[in-house]
Image (cartoon, rainbow, N blue to C red):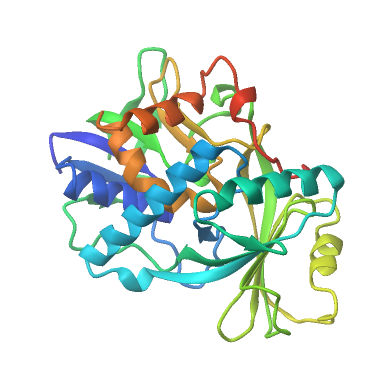
Length: 333
């Protein structure tokens, strides 16, 4: 183990792994990653696709640039098989959502994301795992480390011994939920129940990924035509899922898992440092999370461009005004 790390990153998500690798190999940082191995049989809890549910031009500019940079980065290390291109359809049920979707579609078109009848074609999708086996990143299991937020900064201990880290990042929902007590989370960061379920092969969906923001459901069809469904909220979850699979029922469920996830009350990402602990939280990025690893790494090392720094500053937990960055928020249940 190193006597001191530049960053300690908590999280098992693709974003957390990519962030660790970029900090270590592009920015020359000593990085400690804290995450338990993800069982291969566990259902995915997110779908990583470079299409934000955003109406703000700045978010589309950031996503476009970051998605290209991520693709170039993966190609440079032989990981281009982690990316493919898929069609994504967004379905609005409520009038306000339809209006927001029309605006989203107009803004997205200005950045090369063209939609027809609610379907965006050829959107980058990240799949597979990020292999850090041959990386300089030091990885340890979560049970070996303890994190204690204090009024003078967070303290880390590994196997009972103090560990020094220049920055500590909670880089996915599970890490924040496990390590940050409710009273220490930003007030607009909310926890909600969610489930992932995998069905038997079904009829062809209208697109590889279909998102229903008003029903809290995202569907993704695999090559064997099985469907992975992510459903947020507990109320009427089965009925909401069934409404998105109309014409396919009855349909066998092969597996289901329940978990918790984090959302923001205003639908906008929340990224930045908490006071007084100094912990950095990364939440609410939605489907584009993995693709934002390169600009997030630059932010952490103080090398963000002016445009990137402005975007992250507007989404900090302590930002005085969140109204200018508020987005289309899914209905909470």
